[in-house]
Image (cartoon, rainbow, N blue to C red; front, top):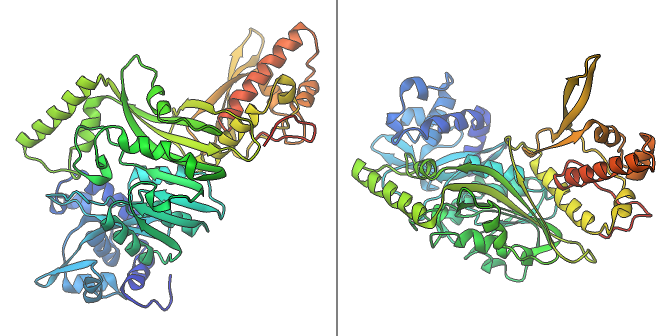
Amino acid sequence: MTAHATGPLPALREALLEAGYQQPARSAQRSRSAFSRPDGVPAAVGDSSSDRRLGGLIDLFAYGRELEHRAATRALAPATPDALARAGILQRRNRRWRSRFMIAGDGDVFVLGDLPRRGRRRDHVDGVTSVALLAHHLTVPVNGGSLLDLGTGSGIQALLAARAGGRVVGTDVNARALRMAQLGAQLSAVSDVRWREGSWYEPVAGERFDRIVCVAPYVVSPDSEFTFRDGDRAGEEPVRVATAGARAHLAAGGCAQVLVCWGHGAAEDWSRTPMSWLAPRGADVLLLRLAEVDPVRYALSWNRPPLRTLTPTAYDEVMGRWLTYYARQGFDQISFAAVCIRRRTSGAAAGTGRLSLDATAPCGEQSGAQIGRALINLELLAGCRDDAALRALAPAIPEGQRVEQRLQHDGQRYRLRRASVRQGDGLGVSVAVSAAVLEAIYRLDGRRTLDQALTDVGVKRNAAGRTRTAETLAAVRELAQAGLLELQATNNSTTTG
């Protein structure tokens, strides 16, 4: 909270923080998304707070309802409705006030987005969405480095990165989005983000960043109706441009995350299309599929209220056009994924490591750290010329790792047969390992090499020992590629980077 806030936006920030606005507003906005009009939300759903001040703020900035002057004044203090109207946040209708924008965010970061209304404009700006928060969780921590928020929209990624101490640039082709992002920066008390207007990487030509995050206009559709959704052209062009240009704008060791969607046939390799967008020599790529839906559900999700409010005739026409487009393209499924790219460090091995993973559970807040480990590991593994080099590494088990064990009764007692390794609050991926492999993995502490861990568990250099060693090394590779181990080179290691 700012004790001596000056100006309408710092004063509004003070009101939002004092009222504890963020979490109740997020719940209210989820309820609001099921209805096409703010007055269509039933009282039993809409009355989410007994606190009159908090309820007023939610009515204004989460539901988009009008408030009479006295209620608005009480909710907004120390800001005033008249001052916020002059700042372009509120508008007056007789003696009642309503917001021009939806306000939401994360923690003490607030951003503006367009409220759902009939007749959406092409330069509509989405506020904080579940996809935006997912992108934040998937971003490899910047740790004080530089970050490019490509296609910044409301500015949520840029503002969160700046709050964490990064040097940030936010770009967008939508000038209105940049104006709203600047208002969000004032509302969030963040002043060190540079906002630039332009298409894709044009505003940062010749520059390199430690991190790039992009929630591209990724929707698979036959339309070019909304900039934030469809981009300037339908099809794969927006995400293709975002992914293909990432490596050229990454510093050595820098990482990019681009959220993408694409269509494919049921029997087709789901990773083929996004991997075809990339030819980044000297980089590693992790493709993490987050969801797969059928075309009908996908088209429904992008053409229902509050995004669009259509008459039955218009709705049938839109759905028919979208489903016909999918059928002609041969799309039986639509996949949603994060393309994660890391530019290798100076002197690293040539080539590109490519890995595709399927998330089978929701991704948590530590997903970005796990992705960072996985990408670094891909470079280290590329430098291991043979198994001897891998055995010379000294892996460590990341903090927060979870092991789910499967026991089987052998007639006398229960014995461990298989185990599943997963990162707590990380990526929704797991790796199955045998009991023998798990015994060696348990000994990895960042000091013991793999060779020493195998010796500790009594692996001998006979035929059976060689089989067990091969199984363990294969498991270590798989765990490392998924970011479930932290590989570390020793002084005697033959890895590079």
